[in-house]
Image 1 (cartoon, rainbow, N blue to C red):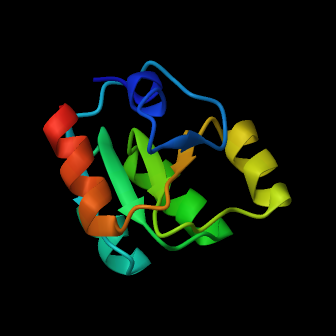
Image 2 (tube, rainbow, N blue to C red):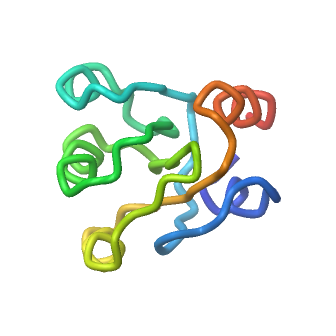
Length: 107
């Protein structure tokens, strides 16, 4: 499944530009220092952290995309930053757990 495929699932809404990057697994973490060291490249990172540091960690770890759960949104300036950096961001009203289950089921 690609990031673009994930964006086509009803529960997920596109926030920034989508890519055809293959999603290899799901990663859930809200502590950025742990995500920086443990987020697998190619993973769909599910979090509620919606700040500039989240975008930086996504770039460093080369995750396939960020999924903001629990109805969390990025501010407009951060959406533009994600677009500039080529970071695919989606959002959902689902919990982190339910988001991860749905993504994993779709892989």
